[in-house]
Image (cartoon, helix red, strand yellow):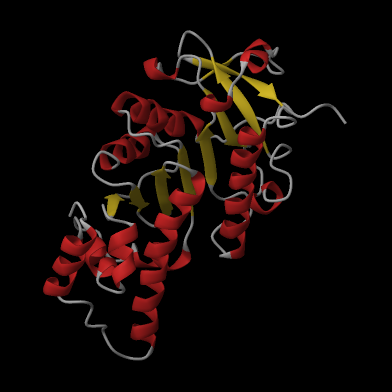
Length: 270
Ligand SMILES: [Zn+2]
């Protein structure tokens, strides 16, 4: 077997295997049927001189837009058509590392195999571009299909601004503490469309996690486990809500006063 780029690079290995760990959670949770979901992580901090010299193993591919903050940046990306459950075992066979070229509009694959990145790459890269521009320190983006949260997006009453956020926050105190900006909403549009990418970028100015109506959730955070955690706490709240409804009643939720107390004690932004 050819040498892996992860060999002798502990930081990079830990990061890529962190993606594998989260991919396993997505599958175990029933959120990642077939090839559903995407993960991309900015791994530029682990790039050494040797990696910079690595010859491309793909032709030059166009991103479809120019992203000026991505010059010389490197990303680990899940492969298109690849399954999360396979990525969990073999991350470098089901994803690859790409280098953004100096024109900021194209990229090449550099390791380990020429696995073509997710078809959602342009929208993921646009979000990474914005994070660098803002200096947010966010390195990871995760898109997945959490069952209960998607179910809740099938009624208009939950799609008005911050209605679902408030409901989910009120189900259990930790949700507000660990998803402190709440859940943005992107109205339904064709997966992979420019409209959806633009809507996501806009919502991510205000939220770390956004709901794609009747489709799934998109989250960003400093690393892939942190992005997963934000989705996980929201999903927990959605499950509590559904459990109460299944028992035949509308849950009261924490009061405004109790939620205000959480905000004060934890020093939360909202
Ligand atoms: Zn999806």
